[in-house]
Image (cartoon, rainbow, N blue to C red; front, side):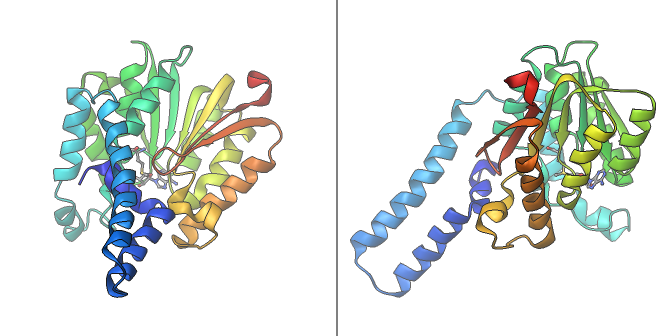
Length: 274
Ligand SMILES: C[S@@+](CC[C@H](N)C(=O)[O-])C[C@H]1O[C@@H](n2cnc3c(N)ncnc32)[C@H](O)[C@@H]1O
């Protein structure tokens, strides 16, 4: 199953359809109704497949990094005590999202990217590939094992040298970057979901967003929790729900929430858009 198809599981409407499919089978309804339910599910999957097929393929380096992430022996690292828990490799951005990031990074005037939440380096490398030669991605990762692994993957990629990894909680790294008066044209929020509100506020309090800068947020629809209020994902979902509320109430920014994959939000200062 492609990663885009797997992402459909994050859509509560699709999960309802799957439940409905189980029900119609049990309730002995007509074959025509079952066929229509199947058709709706097939159409949703076909749309995702089509978007994936229409999208530029990842570079050889990105393909290799994605493959290495999927093939990595996470269980062994966990059993040897190097990892507290086995990460879900679905955290890695898929190609559709990665090409979207590359498009944004290439729109012009983006030279410095700050990423909060590196994992194995997929999105960091995607940004790096679209930056000019003197461009830089600074990426924060809390887990030492993951940070080392990402470094080893990035060292094999041509644009990997543009990525600097800060192995510490993002909050600490943000403070240090602000002390050094560093600013970023693009800031990507993708760390732990309950940290989203804090990270968003810190960006402005610490002055990390460069003039005309853009904030990009992954998982802004997180399994549908922000609009279903079902708390399907517990406190992780709560974090994203609160984040949506904070951004909605922030009159200083312009925001757009796109239903790409698990939801991508783009935030800019109001005066840069109006
Ligand atoms: C969703 S993954 C990032 C995925 C990556 N951006 C990509 O698209 O391939 C989130 C990562 O953030 C890390 N993380 C979680 N909380 C963090 C924090 N407070 N500071 C820094 N990293 C954190 C996790 O260890 C994990 O590797």
